[in-house]
Length: 306
Image 1 (cartoon, helix red, strand yellow):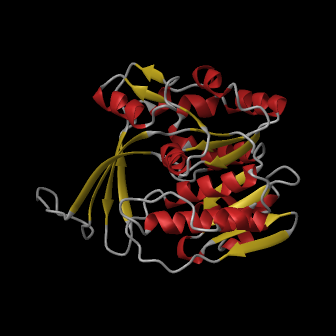
Image 2 (cartoon, rainbow, N blue to C red):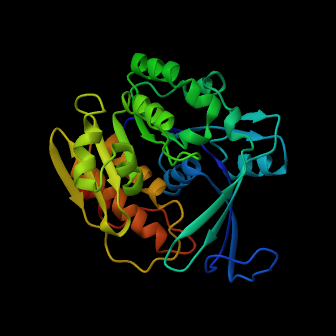
Image 3 (cartoon, rainbow, N blue to C red):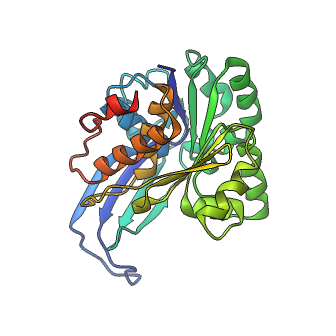
């Protein structure tokens, strides 16, 4: 199996809800559920790999506070080389609403402080592997160093997978230009439906896929995660689609990140693109429908993906 790694946003997630949008300022609202857990896009992918007992590397940093130590402990033994930045740790508060909608409030914290110079030593064993870049719009210093990172990856035979997330300032002309530059060095673009349409300037998945493919290197793959509609992919002019199974949803937070874990694991094991889509969709569906979350593969999936 090819080596797997993720680099990007690892932070503290506080999930609370459900609450109907939106409480009146100055009031207090009681909710039925709360959970404090390690998260962030890169963190969610790593947790899925760990739950499946897959070897992987996660490169990250944390703040120099109690939450930073808590995250390091939560990701052991994979966090031994993490950088401790002289700042507070990023916290994201997620409010859930009826109908599976969510609202997030996130502090800047440690995420903008990690640069490629600090992250590179954590990835020295990745030659020939797959590197997932997550939460790019939150990683200011690292994103500014992406050109050096891409050169390093090309020299090492490392394929870049990208899930940049949503720009805090929205899809301004500057952010679109920046994202399209990143996409130009990407072998696996892994984005959700809304992000795909924004990045492509399209009004649907079918029109977004070929537009995005034109931004990628020859032979690269575009994957669009579409929630209950499953996932779509474009490679070499061919569209693939995997339908999501019907499940009783418990918690959808991080579903796309968990899909990334399954998809990239299958690619690392030499699976075809349709089987990789299937792996990501089934894994994500299993996780969002279980509490506590279950990250192991469904019975028989390994044999179908090999």
